Length: 168
Image (cartoon, rainbow, N blue to C red; front, side, top):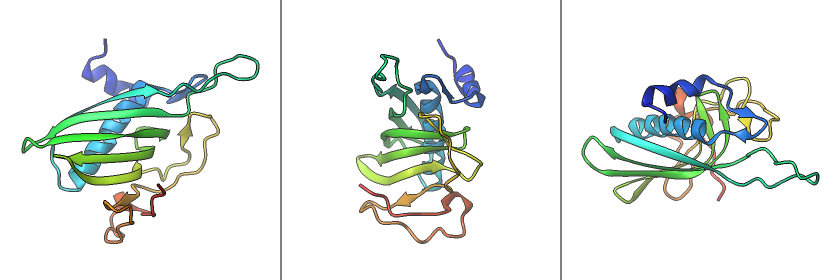
C-alpha cells in the first residue's frame, strides 16, 4: 500500500517502460497538474484524489503485450469552500512530473470550469508517451473555455503558453 509520501516519490521515476505508461504515476501527475490548474483558475483546492486505469493495448501479431499508450483518469475532491470537484480524462503522454497530455475536463459543483489537452508545462526536451518514441516539448497548458475556444487573455503568463483550439 502506498502512503502519500511514497506515491509522491514515484514521480521522479521513469514514466515509461516495456509496459508503456504507468497508471499510478499518471494518476499522481494528473492530480498535481489538475490541482495547479484549478488553483490558477481561482478554485482553491482543499483536496483532490485521482485514480488511473490503463487502457488495454492489446497484443502484437506475435502475441506479446503492446505498451500502454493511454490511461483513463478520474479525480474527486473539494474546494476550500466545500464545492465538489471532479476531473476526468484520458492521458496519452507525460513529461517528468511537469505535464500531462491528453484530454481533460474539470467541473466544480457540476459546472465545467476547464477543458484542456495539456496540463502543466511541457516545454522540456521530450514528452514521454506510451509508445516510447518521445518527441518535442509542446508548451504549457492549452486552456479552452466551455465552448472549446482558446482563451487569448493569458499570453503573458508562463503557465498558459501556446493556448490552442482544442479538437473534439
